Image (cartoon, rainbow over all chains, first blue to last red; front, top):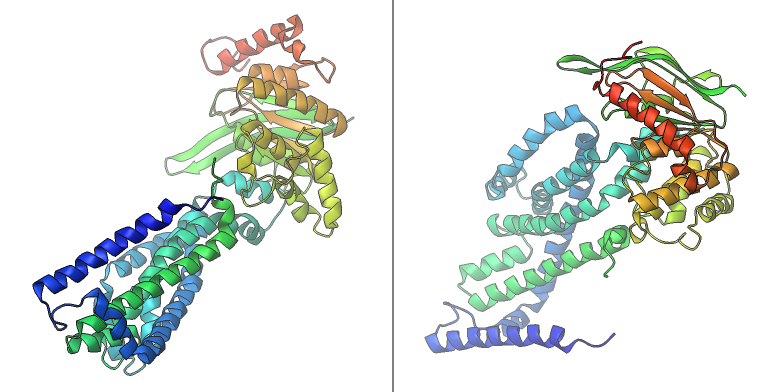
Length: 255
Length: 264
């Protein structure tokens, strides 16, 4: 394949221009580091707290992944129950919609008060609570919209409900599942940071951000934001990789 | 040869909020072993209900369905189905799609044996060389051929074809009709073919059953005693055209367009 210069250099040049403009703006306005950070200050800010970045970054990452893992298990189970039973769907759907409508920032203090001091548990719980909804809904819709002919082909041979689920319904739902998992990964990440920022003495990058904010240390705040973006992108591409492996068949071949 | 499929006085109604919704009323059909029975009728007259009853996926309110001298009380491993929608599984290759029924019916069968059987069928319908393709890489006609292979792979004694050629263009459809005749020579099977194409019913059927409008009852049975496999030219031969016009008249009656003969 030919190396595509345009695909690589155009975005790089655009990003460089943006950073230059940002740098110039801070210099031109004469903003100090407690008012705004310039791009050139970010790397030194990172180096000053390098050990903390890695330690807290890991905490944020594993809490998010743990919450997401629970979401996958619980969300898939809920989706299965709702997708396979009309009655359970009618019973659970309004509850889920109602729960999902609650702004999750308001749940943080409730959880913090219920499980005082258990930061790891609280954070993982929050990451789970905020992210299971799209998974449950997509699995439920995937299962309930299965065309009856797909079922009949195996049912007419005397296959059990489980066999139909395992051989047809589950794999057929995978593309929707991974679509939802991409959304859920981003949401779980928000949940983790919500807890880390709002509750005192939490750890993780959210906590580092919070202490930077207390000191009006803009370079550190922006450095944390960029570290969070990198973690988020990493998480997203982990999901994309899993999708390629397990649901690659759903991708249209070009041409 | 006895009748392999016997449908005796089948009456069925769906339960809806507005009360029972009758779809089949005292339906009688007999299909001898190895013969093709084409079922035609106005749309929405309960033809698909009939397929589900024969497959044992549903049970009639009254009357009996018998296959091979046994009353149908549950799904049987000796039935194959194909629908208008080929419903191939996109995450499996064509070969693996065809193998699917064997995984249910004969889980102990060695993998090589399953693949050999599937390859043999795919070659018969002209899909040699497409075994490793994904369904989306095939044309509509080819997908329907693969779907027919899947219906036959476990050597069923009955296949239920629910408008399998209905969504294809006219020329592809004629190709598949011929394929169906060729398949019958190599894979003798008893079939119920639901269709809304009268020419198809005459070309492929050994008998044509015309159902009345809903609730459907057996309105007319026509024997097509023409030898098979039939060449495509036969579609336009006088003996076909003659039968077609009789069937056309029967459909008109089934749709309620003429007053005569109804219930006679």
